[in-house]
Structure formats: structure tokens, C-alpha cells
Image 1 (cartoon, rainbow, N blue to C red):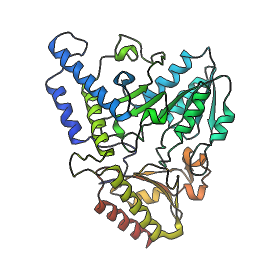
Image 2: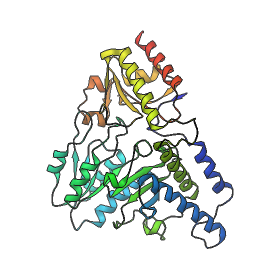
Image 3: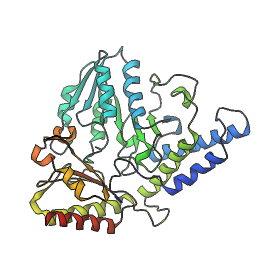
Image 4: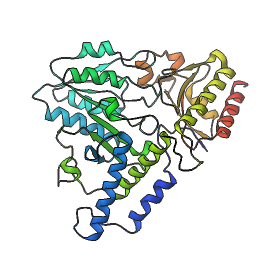
Length: 381
């Protein structure tokens, strides 16, 4: 199986797994316990917190461990809505957000809040002028993802942050897809909240983090004892906290091209491989393939491309030993394209053939050549 679905989930890095072992077989103490075993696990959690913070250029006290990106997103949206309801009940997001943002927004709408869903242009980018026009005196939060999971398109967060700051509005970004692939410096981005999903950055599923800028208080999503500096109750998931910390440390090394070994591609090398793949597809299929997403402002690993003569499912069926995702779903005799492609005004003809290839640090040139050969054989049928 050739794996080209890294935006869906990543394998656990071997060094991440090794870091977990000590806390699976030996140091199992509760970090809240006062004895030696508790002290060791508490220290491990805090060291992991520092590593996550370092990747984001944040302070450790600004990092909260969660169960994943969905919990982090829900904590921000519901927490801000509850805490700042006396200031207003209006939230701005975009039409291309992950369901982990869209669904809590729908929940809030059912409970008396107003949500504006901003459209995007044909490249999948939020229009700054439309954002400005959507602002009201009731707006308390803007939530715009850093990079889209389907197309990889990167949003102009620094510009959005300026607008939010000028209007005294909090800004959240779902950075599940961007963390570890591109720089996610919270200070440069200007965000108040940033969500991290561990399983997108070579850590296990079921662990994530939330950056909350120092000085901001929101109601916790989970109440209980005073874990995570009183912001998220529940006995710490020491094993997975350590895993996320190690994964973030490795990601920071790769982003800075301080490679721990020569088995892993850096983001720059992944981009070169992705660009080669795209160039060969355009050469082989000529005008019968169309790029979905911004041509340059997108994640270095992501290629969402439509094959105009086929449906995405036909491509998947032909590439039977290759893991990837489509941008459309077949229902009986009809085809429905994804909400992201719809928001980008992609036509049904184009959207039905959309396929997302997402590369990772283990992707090899030989694997890409094999996929190109398989696709060439499809073209010749």
C-alpha cells in the first residue's frame, strides 16, 4: 500500500512511539500525586508542553492539552460564546471550515447566536473586504482555518488578525493541517487561539492541544478538578502528551531542516516532490486535469487535482493499492462534490473528478513514479 493520504492522518513516527514506551511500561503515576512516580509524570507532561509551545513560539503556560482538534475547536467556540455573551452574540467563520468548526457554529445558532459564513474565491481564499463588511458591534469571535484540509489553500491570517485587533475581536484558527508543514508562529499570525491535532503531525489519534493567548479567559468545556491550569479538567493523558511533545520537537527540527536522520523528507523536499508530481500529471494529461486550490499559497504536501474524464471514485478504483481521498461522493446515479469545492464555485464536471494527493515525510520518489505509471495506464484505456 502506497500512502498518499497524510492530510487524513499520519503514521506515528518511530521516535514518537519510543518516547511513549517509558510511560506505558514504567512511569505510570498520576501527575497530581505527590510521590515520586507522580512527580516524574508531571515533569514529563510539562516538558511536552514546552515542546509544543516551542513549535508555536508560545509560552508553555499558553498551551492546553486536549483530546484533539475537534475538542480544541469546540472549547474555543463554545467557551468564547459563553464567556463573552454580554458583549455580543455574533461569530464569523468561513464556508470551508472543517466540521469541527461548522458543527459547533450550527449548535450556537440553535442557541441564540448569529454566525456569518464567509464565502471564498475560486482559489479558496477568504475575501478580506467581505470580512470587514460582516463585522458588527456584536461580533465577539472570528474563526478562520489556517490551511484547508482538502485543497491546502492558506488563509491570510496576519491580515485577518489586524482587522480583529482593530475591532477588539478575538481570533481563532484551526491549524490542524498546517502544524508541522509550514510555520505556525502564533505571534506572527496574531491569533488568540490556535488548535492542534496530534494525528496530523505523526503523533497518535486522540491527542491535541490548544493555544490560548496569555490574559484571555474562557469558560472550560470540561469541568472538574483543576487540571491544565484550571482550563481543562481530567487526569492528564501522560503517554499521549509525551507523544505530542516529541512529535512537535521533530516537526520543529524538520521545519528548520535540522534533520534527525535521513529517512525523513523536510517540508521543502516534500514540496519538490509534490511539484514534480503535479508537473508530470499536467504533462501527461495536458488540459484534462485542473488544479483545485491556490497555485502557490497552499501547503507544501497537498495536491488536489481534478481529472476531467473520470470521477474521483473511478480514479480510486484504478489506484487500488494507493491510499488517497476524493473530493466527491457517488450516491446512486448522482455525484455530489464536497462543500469546500462547492464554496470555491467548482463546477460539477470538474468537481466530480477531484482527487486529493497528500504527501508526507515518508513519501518516496519511487512511490510517486509508481502512481504516475498507474495513472498513465488509466489514460491509455
